[in-house]
Amino acid sequence: MIPRRAVQTDIAGDFVMIVTEGNVAERRNVELGVQTSQASS
Image (tube, rainbow, N blue to C red; front, side, top):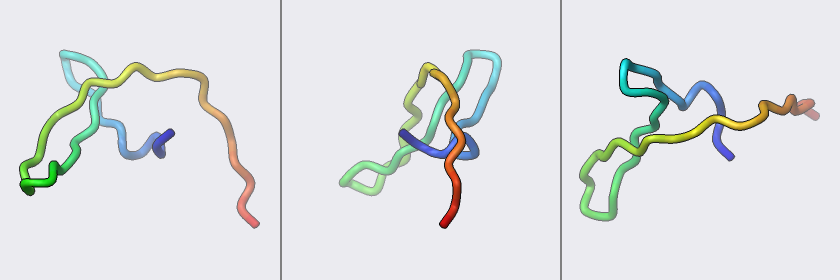
């Protein structure tokens, strides 16, 4: 899981950006599931 704030949205849908081992930024499309809340301790 990743924080919701890491997910971006455009006309093509939801996506995140990752950095590969070669330091290249790549878009990865994602499908959102059920959001859970987490309590901070």
